[in-house]
Image (cartoon, rainbow, N blue to C red; front, side, top):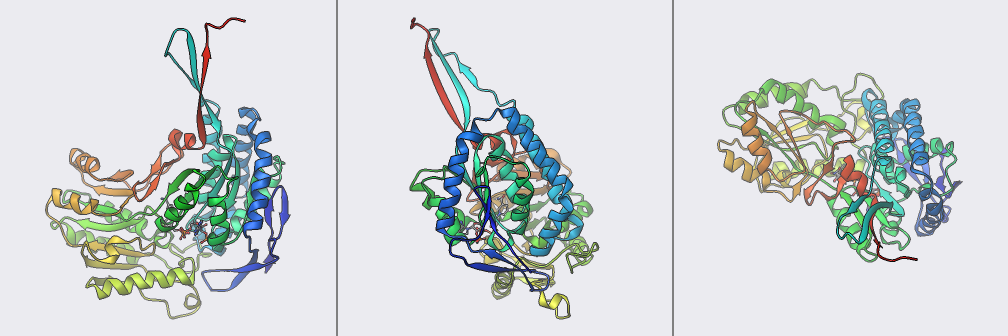
Length: 483
Ligand code: NDP
């Protein structure tokens, strides 16, 4: 078992308090490391370092910063296997996908590197005697507060634009899954950036996260996580009117129309539902299936679910590993109990494995509920686990759109039909940031990711997302003045 340090101001240091906390392998419940228990004093150090680095880093030519981003992309590809193994160890990401997930984020750095170099300002033709022009400037110190569901990837999608555009960054990784962030810092140390350009501070959200969100020296918080925490961060950040970027939860409606390709839809949606053990904000949240194809879809979805290999995430054959922690497993089991209490029916799954070695891990077997209704907790709240929720059958387009929109969330939706005009009418009516129309989950740095309603504020990825990390300055020049 190793003891780790935080990366602050270009140095590896322990927490000011001298305290550490344990992290565990979710596949077997064994302690794997002790991490520094960062607190307010450590946040002050990181903010101080990032503020000192900002004038140096932000004044570098964009071409130089873009070269750094390209080098990070190479480092990610070269070290994807090792970084992926860390996600497997402390998060339970199946090894089958772990390295590819990390390597995939190299593209975010390349994309940011290219596009930051062509982020031009504008002139505004307001008056012939004045020149008014606009320029994008980095914001300053950005706190990146990220969740555990993709421990490294969630950091990388934020770090790529924030850093490349000239901001200095303080990464606050999820406290239970911080190992990959620390390994990333070890790799970035080789780039010899001005000390404090990137800092990684470990410790709980209730101290490290809150101190960052309320700190006068932090100019922006870019947060991905739950709605509850997002609201707390908004409240804290409001005291100093910080720039905020929030990517929050979802309860995403899947609508299967009667003319859909049922085979393709059932297989694609089962893969989506149970990927990362359902711990993805874009996972299906509620299935609305037309009465004419309900039985066929449910049968094929169940068959696809039964084929999933659940087990040791370190095994190449495994499709689904454990949940991230005992606490989260208990939370998911609470949702399962509430579904049963409120009258939903179980088609399959939901049990804890009873045999070793899975018995000691935080596993919940892939589960399917049917007969859920709009008012049930399992249909309203984000379960964030391997639990598919089938709502009652529908037979009216207008009614299903109304039910799909009956949610505080508005992250994404999947609509399956062969009639694209009908599908596009659905896409227009569903209040979400992304609609996949007979398609399942395409993500790329050039495509924006955003939430309606309580699913977030601002965009991740795309040119819109790049601009989130800049201030827009207007400069006026009076052309009539002579020397
Ligand atoms: P949390 O909101 O619990 O935590 C996210 C991060 O915030 C962690 O680093 C956490 O620290 C920190 N934090 C916790 N409390 C505070 C606080 N009071 N002030 C500041 N920071 C705090 O989310 P989870 O880690 O549980 O992740 C799951 C959630 O993330 C789901 O709701 C999911 O939908 C959402 N998510 C959204 C995505 C999107 O793109 N829309 C993508 C991925 C996930 P600590 O680890 O110490 O608790």
